[in-house]
Image (tube, rainbow, N blue to C red):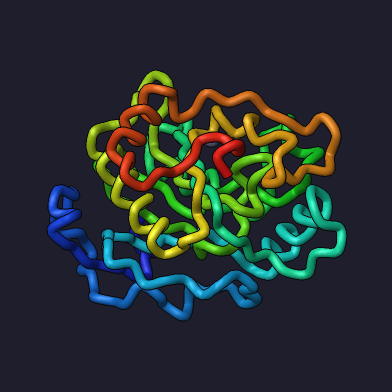
Length: 253
Ligand SMILES: [Zn+2]
């Protein structure tokens, strides 16, 4: 199931000494953190910084052919900019999720198809499938599914600014201590890489941004109600990231 892994970014520092880094299989390789193959073709966002915080990321890309690019652009035009010409984002927000699926493979199989299926509540919002830039497995391993600055469909109203971090878990399967550590490390890495990131929210908190300057949604009544990844998990995550002074609502913008 790991035959699609094509790139592994490896680095550990004393800061991340606690991350669960066993020797992965297949063998991993040392790469810089800005692989050209992972950059969007039309990236209008500021150049990312090189983080001093490093984190082990395994690239396992979902299908993102010309069809998904076309569907993503259609989504952007429908939801917030009828004149949009590219699918890149300017990261200002990180949104934490749980997958509601039981395994990494089930999660990958959910996000990999380019067309949305089996989500009648979302279909009026466009045909591109849901996805996220990252997914973290129960053991804390971090997988990157798509370029960080390409739009993923994971949070209504905020997709144009938001990097999504999914975690394999559900209400019946609360997120693990390893996932808490991995989320902490990944958020630190992303905040250093994209200094404009000021917001960290759980998916269940996203409606707080309705009416703010960050919120973009043109479809009336297009809204969902979420509970992931639980207030308990966000409380623990924020406690570990207190020093970053990230905001959880638009008023501290
Ligand atoms: Zn979610």
